[in-house]
Image 1 (cartoon, rainbow, N blue to C red):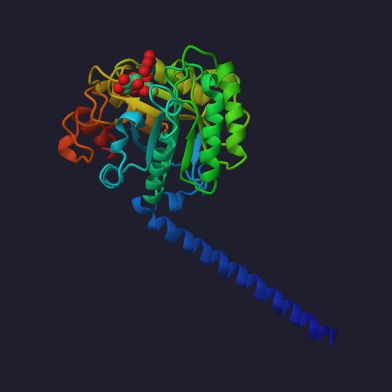
Image 2: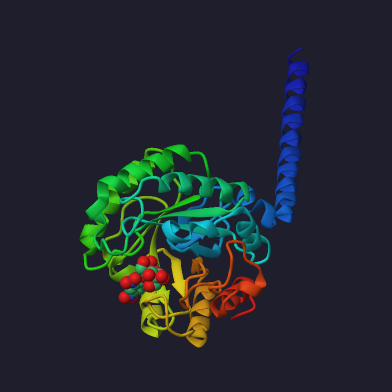
Length: 337
Ligand code: DCB
């Protein structure tokens, strides 16, 4: 009797092991299938929740990921360019996998007119329905110190992060370009806003740095002690050159995870140039370091950094691309390096 029980036990054990082997094989087969299927139509469905691992941005499988795309101009002025046709063009013809919504605080933005919240939500939904990542940018600029409108920022990010708490698509950019302030001020603002977002979700949060998001060495010695935090590096090729790339290299060496959430081929005013030689050096630098980048801006404003000609209507095609627009399209299609 005992023998029979023993044999039975061994049989069951063996059966269990071989079952496990089969499921493991099936799992790895399925994963291969998923990888095969990744294309622009299931970019977020495949990559899922993004994470920050050291200085690297990775997907849900811990694979390195590089986001590349375009930023809107101020939604209060050029919001009509964020529409279904244009988002599809950017995804299908520019290979963009991310779009940034620049919601100004003042100068006609959220602080001046809260109705813009409805537009932001509509735009986020449009971008999610196209399976792209979306950066929700609290676009401080003339307000310099992010603490100026900290309470409103907390209110805004609480609304958005509770509404989209289960959505892997969203990246939070909590202060576009602090200036004339200090890292101490920025960090204390960031910690408060991060606490509010973290009540709802663990999505990646980008924190701006002082001097229009150029002082990327500041966080190196005083990092924000939270998961999935990146720091923004912004550049305009006519103003920012090798010295800023060198600073970025040092910051990366010191463990500062960088995200280039804004860059342009113009000078720092958004106009002047174009500066394609310097921009090409930057693109090379970003690709070599697998940095994600987002170009300023999807608008037809009469300025060099605008990707569309002043004559362009709200729905654009190749003929509407400005010099900058043509260059940026080639960058996104990997034709420039
Ligand atoms: C940043 C801002 C962005 C700004 C661009 C280009 O500003 F994040 O809002 O965009 O870079 O300057 C420009 C638009 C203009 C608009 C103006 C004000 O292109 O059409 O009139 O915003 O809303 C920077 C970046 C770097 C520096 C200065 C600024 N810098 N800045 O290094 O000094 O003062 O706007």
